[in-house]
Image 1 (cartoon, rainbow over the protein chains, first blue to last red):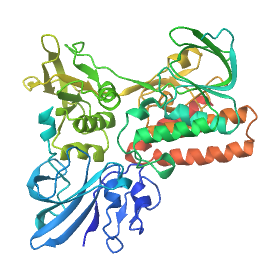
Image 2 (cartoon, each protein chain N blue to C red; image 1 turned 120 degrees about the vertical axis):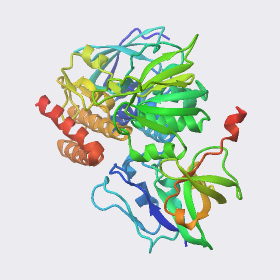
Image 3 (tube, rainbow over the protein chains, first blue to last red; image 1 turned 90 degrees about the vertical axis):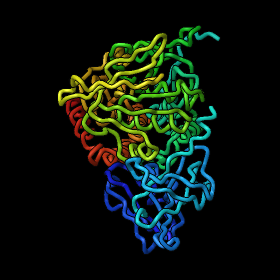
Length: 143
Length: 366
């Protein structure tokens, strides 16, 4: 099951994640600058928070995606979008490439206001380290 | 078209960014005859350059992209009968409430019972050999190029400064297809929000802290920059120079309140390092040393669009109250609500410093 994973380390005034979650799985107690908490029991893995978070700090992780592989859903706002089946460089928060990943889904919803959600599979040990991919830069070269 | 006579309004607002729009909405809503002046051809201030999703709470349209917030605010201002005068550069403000402007052809004269200045901020420059070469621009200019004009001002960028402006503009340059080679930051750590930094680091951009730009050089335009490590006093360390080939340097080294008009109006000034430098003394009703001149947004201290919007709303309500269009009871309840929202935005490790600085300014107004 895909479940919410939040990497929101700093106390900044922000709470769209709380309002977008249809099942109340994300809460911020007290002040708006407090850090959000994700409740994996309640989370249905819909991914609305992944696209809504202005800080791109919400992810979905499925540690049992496939034998030996986890899936990670993350927001992506570059063009061109990757395509399903593509091999991509999976990166951590510092931009270090951890491993190759395979694009499993590219999700675009109108309610996400142009933020796509990309799902990639990676070896399970990287499940909670992957935060994105090296952007596909083909179109930059074409310029 | 010529304006020979002087047009009178209850409230004249200068600057149609988030603060000015917030003020106009509240003043218009209260029934004040409201005029909103802006030197640009389009209202919205910096909002229409902001293509990223905003932080904040629901009341601040959090999660919405900046330009869409601008559209929403405009719609609301129009609904409340706010009169817009665009392309009008205000150059004078007199003690009797006279506001003089020019639309490049005519001199325009207006008279307001209350004046709300929401003139925003200007970007700081940085002086180094080669800083006048074509290719050295501010981050805000780079943002205007890519997000408003849809033109890349260069190919290979070095961004100077890792505050939120530097981080956001870098992200947007990447979205526009630019190659950002590095961000350099003189401070020992990244100064903007970690989440903004993470967005660009994930994309592979290195943020080099403890480094400054030494010089830019090139034949007719920037072709390379030299950067170096700095010591704890921000002095370059000998032997740490490195050359980076690039064609554009985008400076994101802070903002300063645009105080010229407030100065012309005679408003008492004060200094706050945290809030960006010299700014008009004001109280927590946004009134300056002159009761009829109010201020809001970056002019009253460099913060964010969400704080600017709420400060504008507060100034608009205050002006309406002073004009007798709002009861003290109504005003007080609105003020408490807005100040509570602002206090929320001004807490946490980033906001708290600004809260304390604001309180210092308010004390001076007593």
